[in-house]
Image (cartoon, rainbow, N blue to C red):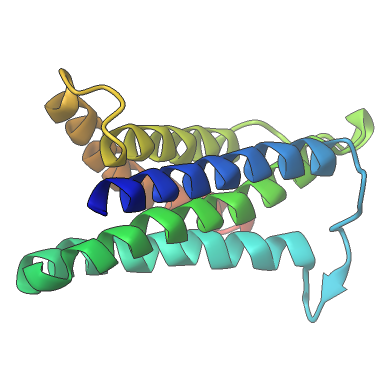
Length: 167
């Protein structure tokens, strides 16, 4: 039973990854427009605030809670994996919205690109670890995954400060 549950989670995760890829391509090619205001900000900004906020808040909570409540580890791990995949979808929608702008309005590549690469590698290393796709280097993947979390916090703060005009 545990094996079928793990394989069903793997296939759900694969479907989410394929959805992220498909929706990102569609957003980049402007199959739809996420560039409309919801309150004071564009919709794609609310998506990235939600996605990055989820990662920024839940990651340390997950780290603490898995040690304090080991009996809930499975639930916490599933929330971490699938929640972060959805958060990455939201972040991807913002990133592809920005990158798909016409050339005369192209964004400057800097902290946003660095941040997206960091989050993408965190997703890849997390996926590889969770579903044990590469067993022999598991400790190395974990080190990269955890190390990039720290990089995420540093770069997201710099990215926000830069885009708010503070630096």
